[in-house]
Length: 350
Ligand SMILES: [Zn+2]
Ligand SMILES: [Zn+2]
Image (tube, rainbow, N blue to C red; front, side):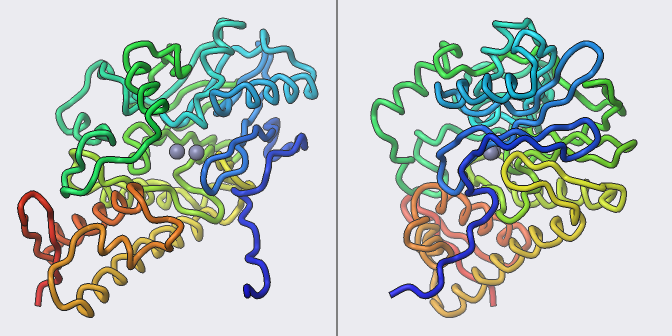
């Protein structure tokens, strides 16, 4: 018997056709998504004298494209007036409609300089060795900690494999503008400060408009949930990378009047939200410490994942996130790691 139903998180709500002005001249529209824990993607729409800019044009699905066209019709702008598509990071729920919009309107596709999907064999230009290490490894290869590779239905797996060679298949966009370390970038008639925020992905980009105090926060800072941090990178410590990216936002959060996330309701308590997300990971690190003390023996990544995540969340993503936390603790000097026939085991140091 379950008691009162758990309150629904705003990221989980199904997409509606409601359109609201969430910041001066910025409309929030919602596109359908059915990914675990997510019911919609926010596509923000900004008009200027040249036409329209959209941010994160949804999933690469028919339903999403249909909804995208309907939302633009509601606003009264045809797809051909979209001159810029901003994609916050290389996940399909964010780039899905980008290439199709470009095909119809010739729009620019703007991403961070490091934009690349995990199945794309080509590397972005001017990549440093450190940057290359922040990319996600293929989840189809055996993971570094010695667990089983990601389970994926065969057809889907093949689509990813082929898509690495034929990007059109999964509608992976080719960015026309890759933003590097510049102070300002003009988009949708505004001057934005680009903030590279690696952690959730290597190429995550937030954009801040100091004049209106508006932050496009993508999946980096969400209203109630925390983004997945994958241990499947060559970077030794993706959690430290993510903490660093949270600090970047914290540094100017007092100037953020509103954050516009890619999922869920826009929020005004950005500084507080950043602290909550950090705290969530610190709590998880504490939990790992107490699990190890209780077990009183070295344990595998999967064993830790079983203590950290609910039964329905178990799987390769749970293992990958547990690994990111265990490696963080090992690098801090709190944990020892040993390799037992290719399977890593971790134990707290006494
Ligand atoms: Zn994402
Ligand atoms: Zn997302």
